[in-house]
Image (cartoon, rainbow, N blue to C red; front, side, top):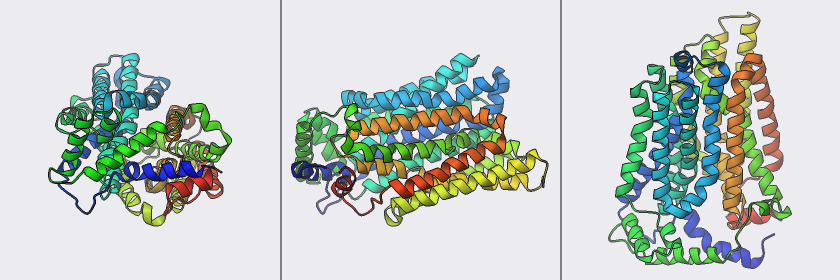
Length: 471
């Protein structure tokens, strides 16, 4: 359990980090905050485009390059392997070259990946390009929310952070629609889903300030004050917020440097179990298998893949927006329980559809059950299981261990994503309805895990949450 002195330190430094600073009764001119956020979340959009690209182009790419099922499964899943590397290496890189430098580097790597895919003549160049995109995607998954959190004022932070998740699902949706209409590696598809968002981020970074908190941490006092003034407006009084940020940086420097092995101390064990457990539930419940290969799933069930993916794309954007809006009202635990129950139902409906198809029963019901199951699945994931595990993870670890904990949980998350996406096609070849029965069982276990282990964190300070968990 944290000592009184540790808790006091947490209280002193928490506000600037979590709330993005104080507005002190003046909102100032926020146009630079909006512009900076837009530039950053183009990286989130790129993230979504990378995820959604493989599903609508599966048949065309396999035919074009004569890929086996195993080779295409490697192409689809190697994205998450690259993302694992990106997620665990981008933290130190971001601290070394800055948030803008990390965003620029991630954009450049993604561009190289997209070009490699477009010009590929075989499986190996295709995989290298996909892995490069994965690295950039994993890097974006870390640096975009960090940058937004560090530049946003208190009264805008929640909405701007939610925009990050919305842009991810928007990227997935656009990739589905564009990829479905092009159905290959066409230049238009690559430019719209890959190169344009990277170009916006890369070029836009020349017109926005660096994170004031990173500048303060590196001791660049003049640049820190200039950046904060640009973000808050030329007439805004930044003196108190600047002082709070500098106090936070000074206190952070006095905290012991955490190591990864410190996570396995007894006082952090419940937090580790909760965060890792939620990441496993999120990924092994089937989301990446469904997301990467939704077109193929619908085709196998006899439903129009183009129509199904468009409905899928629109639904996940709308439901993600609803989930972000109600999270602080409904609470974390009710949302994720509702989400897991919906995932279970979606898997059962899809399993029944494929069971009927395999045994040639009620053929007219097969496509309707399949598309209903898939839409229930993605809608349920979007309302809670997609975002809540990351929110809970950010709340349950003390500040001195949060960086290491975040890296570890992110690694587990991306490994689970790789495992799910790589095995999906093999599971479907083994048994289409058996695959979704397996995912249903995992989602049922997720419900039990959340009921038993996950606390409700709504309306509690970080110190209260951490004191109750890390005893």
